[in-house]
Length: 311
Length: 181
Image 1 (cartoon, rainbow over the protein chains, first blue to last red):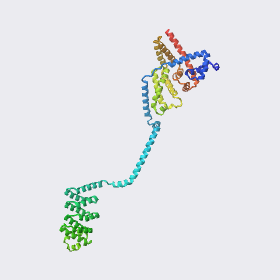
Image 2 (image 1 turned 45 degrees about the vertical axis):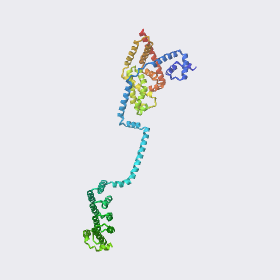
Image 3 (image 1 turned 90 degrees about the horizontal axis):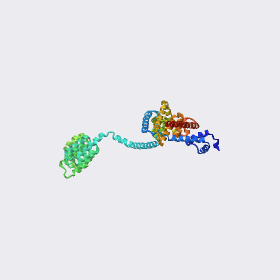
Image 4 (image 1 turned 60 degrees about the horizontal axis):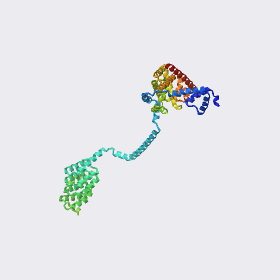
C-alpha cells in the first residue's frame, strides 16, 4: 500500500488541506488508510479537528448600528472630495469623459447629430429658395413705411370721396390734388366722382383736380369719355372749355353727341359748338397757354363756321 | 471592484454589503476588540477607495482586500501596544468565567472564551494564517499569494499555528480547571 510509505510529517502537511476541505478525494483515501494504521496521527487529527471546528464556532460580535451609516457617510464624503479634486485634473477629465461616453449615449448623440444635419439641410434649402423671391421682396420692403402711410391716406381719401356729406367729398377732392394721386385707385375714384357725384360743385372741383393731371394720357382719355356722362350744364361747359384748352381733338365726337341731346342748355350748346369749331380749325395754331387765356373769350368768336361744322 | 476603479464609486456600497462582516471577523479575531475592529473595517473600505487604482483585476478581489486589511492591521499594531488587546480579552474571559456554572451553554461559552484567549496569545503571524484560512476561508494558495510565500510554507505555518493554539488552549483549560478547584 502506498500509505505505508508515507511518513507522518507528510500526513501532517496534508492535515491542513484535510481540515480546510481542500484535499482531493484520492488523497483523502490514502490519508484515511494511513490514519487507520497510525493512532498518533489519528489522535492529532481528532484534536485539531475539534479545535478547528470550535474556531469556526467562535462568535463574532454583530456589527454595530453605526458601522453601515458610517461607511456610507465616508463614501459620500469621499465622492465629494474626489470630485472636487478631480474636476480640473487631466485624469479626472478623461475619467469623466469616459463615464460620460457610454455606447447608449453615443447612439443618442449620433441620432441627434443626424437630426441636426437634416434640419440644417432643410433650412438651407428653404432659405436658398426664398433668396430669389426674398431679394425682390426685401427691395420692395426696403422702404415700407412711407408707401404704407401713403396707401393708408389714399384709402382714407377714397372712402371720403364716397362720404354722404358733400363738404367731406369736396375736402377729399382738394386733398387729392395735394397728394398728387398717380395711384390708379385714387384716379378711378376721382373719375367715379366726376361722372356720378350727385353734387355739381363736387363734380366741378373734381374736374379741376383732374385737369391738373391732364398730362397723364389716361387722365386725358378719362376726361374725354367723361363728356358722355355729364348732364349738368356747368360741368358740360367746363369740360368743353377744358377740351379746348387741352386741344384734345378726340373730344370732338363726344361733344357732337352732346349737341344731339334734347334737353341741352342753350348756352352750353353754344359753348360746345364753339369748342368743336375751335378744336376742328385750330390745328395746333397757338400754344396751349395762350389758348387757355383766350378760351375765356371764345364765345366772342364768330359762330358762322359752327353751322358748317354741324352740317 | 473593477467598476469602482472605473469611477463608479457608488458600487463600493455593494462591496461593503458583501464583505464588511468577514472583514469585521478578521479584525475581531486579530485584535479581540469589537469597537476597534469596526474602525479598522471602515479604514479598509476607505483605503479601497483611495487605492482603487492599485487593484489590477488580475488576482481575486478578496486577496487584494485582505492585503489592504493586513496593512491596516499592521499600522494599528505599530501604534497600539498589543497588551491592550490581551487586557480586553482577559476581561472578557474573566467575566464569563466568573459567572460560570454547570450550565452547558455557559460551559460552551467558557470554552469559546478560552479558545479566543488562546488565539490572542498566538504570535501575530501564526494567528494571521489561521484567521485567514479558518475564518476568511481563503485557500492556501491565496494566502500564499497574500503573504508572498509558497503554498507549502503556508500549510506548514498553519499547521504549526494550529498545534500551538491547541497547546495554549489546553494550558488555559487546565489553568481554569485548577482555578475552579
